[in-house]
Length: 123
Image (cartoon, rainbow, N blue to C red; front, side):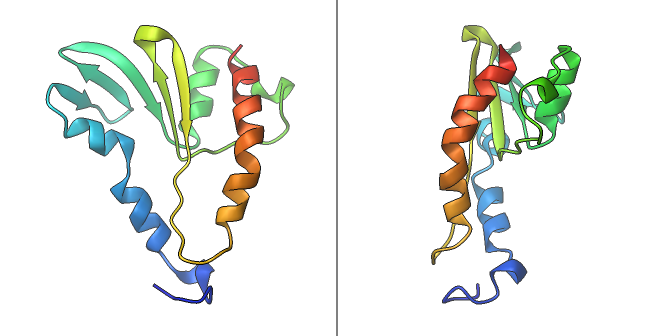
């Protein structure tokens, strides 16, 4: 890792961190859970959740004939989205690891916008 904020665009520690905190990987390691290649989460042989990474969220919307362009002009690309089928709940997860100030600020600045906008897209 490059320290003191130098060369951040050329480091890969954030990607390594995101790989360590991947929700699908975590769930697949839990007893009774299976996560397939497309993000279906199965617990005790029953589909209970759908996990979407970045652009996969827009495939989910397209399958349901939701035109997100009527709400926003640019795609939002959270690290993970989870649709919990059993209680009709949707979660958006952002992961960020950084030792010095920088692009983490962007995540903080856009989280409120995403929190307000994603529900509008889903309605």
